[in-house]
Image (cartoon, rainbow, N blue to C red; front, side):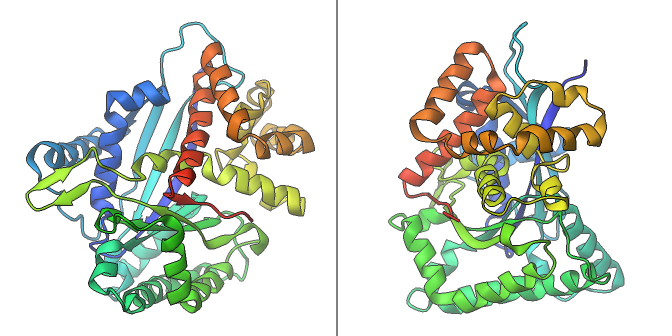
Length: 390
């Protein structure tokens, strides 16, 4: 029987120069390092060999030649990475998956402050945005260098940034609303990331959150309201409630230290397990049904598979026919009160016990996912990540 992968999408938004090209190259270089394989039990490769070669060349240019990657202007090509599990011999896991696929959608920053050159570019922008609607998490990059440049008047940069993002997406949102029907499939967590945080080494993630809220509460609320117009059930939707610090490397004159990264190792956890507890809390609080349930935990997302792995469901999901089977398992097991409680409470010592148990049993998918959960908790303790409590 053919093995499957858990697939998840992440959308990255950032103005030109905010560090997207460096970030994805640093991410791929980190995931290709042997120590990452040893820690996560995942061997990550780019699904497109040409893309992988370019990204790894960029990474080696930083690591060995102190050369930063060139900005990839107007690029809207998604990147696909598959993380295959370490060889497991004849051991069986509870759910028939052998890896995790991450689809990375990079929305060109130039589109936020440059008008379309014509109908063809308008169509391309709309198509690019539609392609990232499968994402559960969207990450908006805030450039730390711009904060330093505007020190004491940070609102000048921040207000313009959020206004540009809103105005750049507004025509596309209006186009998506032509039939007046809100979307069930839409990024439901829009988190803010401080890119190049190495230039503000003393800034903690709580201070980053406070700065954004203090200086741009109105602009963030306008962005939230605009995006909220097109999402089905706004109670399962969050904009500007989650914050993370990111640094692709430590840059200094004539030197790039790729080993001194911040937050880059959280990309896979943020894409794969970060939304899960949020979705579970939303489902528990509102008892969602119908289309929202299908999207939050159904076949369009990795979440149902992740739940199945973490709570130890048997592989009957794989034996039921197609999407009908997925929804049947979803209703009968995945959203049971016991499953929700088990995921919500899988934290701290229990999370580490689950990780150790998975390693002992050779269940490396469960080991990888629980390790991702540990990584997120550790990042919170280190003041790198701040997750919403809602």
